[in-house]
Length: 212
Ligand code: SF4
Image (cartoon, rainbow, N blue to C red; front, side, top):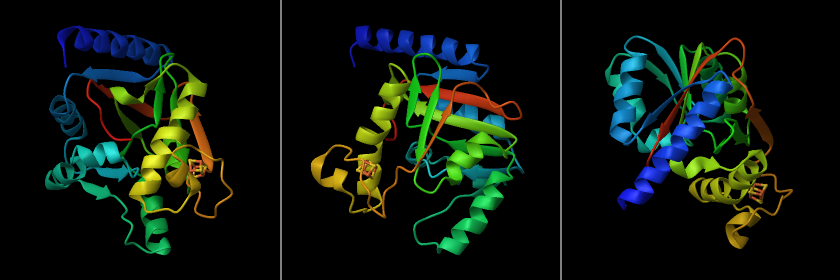
């Protein structure tokens, strides 16, 4: 990337950081995934319970493996688990020391946009874990809440439908059709306008394209 674009992107992320702090979130900006990973691993330390919110961003960063090697207990579901297995795991994840997830959008005025199919992640980011670590690459920055919701449905959801091998209409048309499909993955919207009162929240912004 040329130096001018890099400088502009850093300026934008820094403005988003200020907006998030105004909304009572903690926020750190990193230039690279490696720097962000180091920060998260150091912040969590050892012997903690960690819930994972099915984040492609966190999975791209291989965070769960590192945390497990550091004697942490990581609750992370996979598609091979039965519904009952996933349910039990999500209940443990919500009662964690740290919960790691990635919003589908971070707005320039410091709001965090999430859309879920099942709602386990939307539940956990609202209340339960002692501390949230919410990671987002620069590709998740949107102008405002409406733009964030548009991004969640017309960019993130389509990629997630393909990843999860869902046969929803957006996979064919390339845009959200606001479907009535039983496999629909956009059923619950949670927007953190401000930090939830009882949960510490750190937003980790990274000046790289990451996740969906
Ligand atoms: S078509 Fe359905 S599954 Fe696809 S993005 Fe829209 S609401 Fe979500």
